[in-house]
Length: 289
Image (cartoon, helix red, strand yellow):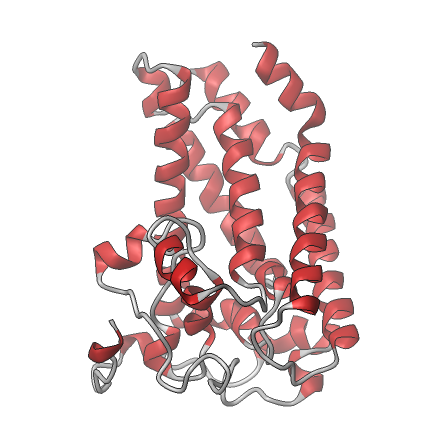
């Protein structure tokens, strides 16, 4: 109970501390060891991407003041959720909860690529013409609201401890900033690390303008789901320095890097089948595994 009380009192401070800490670490790393040359001014992209992050935080606080922790408290008090129905030790419950919620994030990520209406929202994340730490937090407010509602449903069904919610939120935010970092890791370290954690080189493939590459490597934190479900791709065909980032039909800076363009992007163009539903791709990457 003491852990829960501490978490409830300091939840916002803990999460904000990790967010700004990771932003600083990865931001400096990008300066001293960048993986790619940027195509758009960092000042323009950072001011608009981070502006979107703070706007989303305001919207979430306005709509869901209790957030995920509040829903977890409610579920615990009502005895709702699989882990509340059964007697499970705290640390086993935390482990099960974090792994299960990461799997749900993977499945949700596949869903927003597969359903054209949801892809409209998610393409705000993909339309960033460069790939750096701020890309990891760049999502349309409507997608953030959708994600929060899915998270609430999972919490009510699973009944995770409050500690698990905080660990998962910190892990998700920290790894999203890490694996979206424009940073260079030694190839041997990257090869070993991607068995335990999604690395920048692994996830960068997912931001390719090539349809089959963009529909691979959906994992955010744990890399196992892509290998298990057959969505893993080792490397981009053009290489990390030469691959094109973003979405082909959205290349104008005003469309993809300015705040107003970012917010209105989901409402542009016609709804049609997204590329994940196509079956005519050529499998050219077998030798990259």
